[in-house]
Image 1: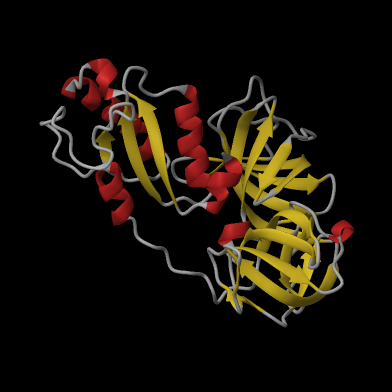
Image 2: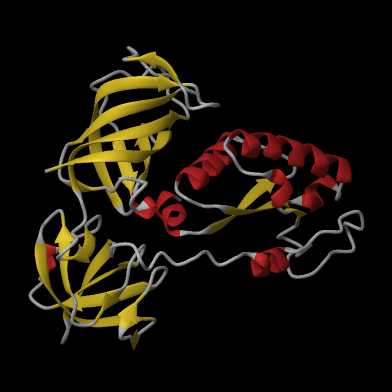
Amino acid sequence: MITGASQADAAVLVVAAPDGVMAQTKEHIFLSRTLGINQLIVAINKMDAVDYSEARYKEVVEQVSGILKMIGFKPSEIPFIPTSAFYGDNIIKSSENTPWYKGPSIMDSLNNLKEPEKPSNLPLRIPVEDAYTISGIGTVPVGRVETGVMKKGDKVVFMPGGASGEVKSIEMHHEEIPQALPGDNIGWNVRGIGKADVRRGDVCGHVDNPPKVADEFVGQIVVLQHPSAITAGYTPVFHAHTSQIACQLIELNKKLDPKTGQVKEENPTFLKAGDAAIVTIKPTKPMVIEPVKEIPQLGRFAIRDMGMTIAAGMCMSVKQK
């Protein structure tokens, strides 16, 4: 879910009408927002299981709206669609089973999504999702261009490893293309790059403006849940773009008021669920991350431990290796 959300511009949040908001609903809304999704469609599904009740629909809309507001989405701009995926109600076209609902269907809402501006003027950044060996071509990394433009003949480098070479070819959907733009899911082949030089979690950029490798970085985080408290020394797994790396919180710098962002406490001893904070983070091995103000697409991360999302945040500054 994290990899998917970090690559998407929009999301459909599915909430079951009989159950309403569950723990995972909150987690998914929270992660979507943190990972940079700005457009949301909410499907209130399994309406057949509540006999297409308008009252139940309204209750669930209320519940979901409460969480959306809390993290900065505007419910008034989001379609809440009563659906039954099983029977196809309001998926393609308006359903007779919900005469009280006058809004768009799922398909209409998808067609109404706005294509975001392509950040092609930012430095090139392509997080590697995987690397394949293809006979006759060699090593082919695949991934989504987050920012910038890559052309055939460009000199590129893979960080944190540092292997570099010239782009020989770029393919999208099995067709060769002369250049790749933000949003393109591509495979590309680089002269002199072997299977050992590139792996999932690496980031490709131009040689003259390589991706930043953090020795440590300062992040602003919001704690979603934690069974006890988080203190300095805690080492959970950070998910940023396609990388998953254990990182240690070496210092808790400031506790913030989550609503206003003002400093509430300097050097707090611990953080618990609901707290927002500024922390200093040290990756246990080299990791690419960018300040969110410079390259927002590579500045966000989720923190996971014990099979759950503990927190999410964004990178404020990087102390490079």
